[in-house]
Length: 611
Image (cartoon, rainbow, N blue to C red; front, side, top):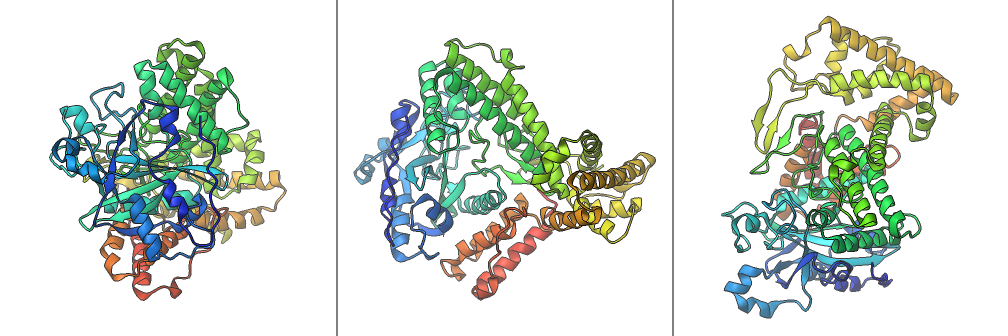
């Protein structure tokens, strides 16, 4: 069970709640044996590179009135709380004197399934370089906080493969270091704030500790950091007791946080678990595919949170085009592609249907028995319906119109045909074929359909009827397209013309269904699609390059400017009209921060079509 919420203190300037992040966590009591405990010690030489003031306020770690100022006192307590390194098995054997430096409480590394390990049942896998700092209950929510880069644990793939313990910092074996990269943490902080601002469920970066040698401790927070992988290893091992304990713990937490309805128990709760993950994962898979978010979802349920939120930005990317042949090279295996994410998410749902049945009946049935389970059907329905809603949204139709439009048979039929043509152009690939890149392999997409959705209503509003085929191609042509990729042949000409006819038919039908003048509705689509499909949209490439520029300039800026830059950058990239907030006035910033911010925005425009 989840422990009763610890009441947060309301204070004008104190930092007492940081002291509660001392390694204690209700998961330890609820699921004993599902983690490895480690003593920790203070790691010298760190400085606070980034602190997320808005998240800290939301979590109750600082008061609502606290300024965006990394004061000496706040700096000290952030370092004292998060600048940690575990005393692992190697240390205990070779440097037992380090145990004298250990904090009073131990910190857990949780066990979960991981495909990088030789064991397919999760006996050796889990948090390989992370520990959980603790939990925080404040303002109606309970948060989990964990830190990546705190040292190599026995759950690292390196130990699983080589059957020996590693010294933290060892670069001789893959996954053997236990440290995290500063640039990786900064890119994750920027990307997670952008996605969070746009309504995507994701962990967020609370703090980054920089050690000056390229390594960092990256502190992340979310209301529930459990992944499907935390459940699946108990299933694979046939450990019904621990499986039930972790499921009951998860359900209690979700109810306590208000994420789930009033408490249910027993068979009803377990069936609801399967149905809830089906709905969440269906919407998540549709969102990722529609927004070109590459997140390595696989059978192990490792790189995703239980509610479909994003965790671990190491391999995550947001593409500028639908680069659906891109695969991440993870040393010994290639990742799934963005189109394969749907099938992998569906399989995770199928596995939770198996888990629910196992918990109810006490008998573990074959996974194949659940291919047509109601949860799997719910996933398919959620994926299909949300994908249609997302296409309407990208076209510029406001969410309050979607139900009325999709409920109309005529509109829905035209939308289905429009979606088919849209997908044809979206998935068109370069004649160049696949090729290797720094972190994997890709095969370039050639058309930018966001540009079409942004420009088309503007041209129609200006009085144009049907765009010339060559002009249409000019608008959607990306920098990846060769002359051969954009040749006009009869079938392509027909698709382009039909695309425009259907666009206009959808507009006219929507105007009739909502009782609006066509011109007025078109003006609304122009306004909304200009933001939703804006030219400058962040990609994974842009986030990495912008983060490296930020790191390079860190010694020339005021210590508070990095938060300004990250939060301002994220605000600029909120492309949802419903969630858009005021972009900060950079004219009030220091000259160095202002110049760097403008440079980062230019990077977004330059790499807008990339990976």
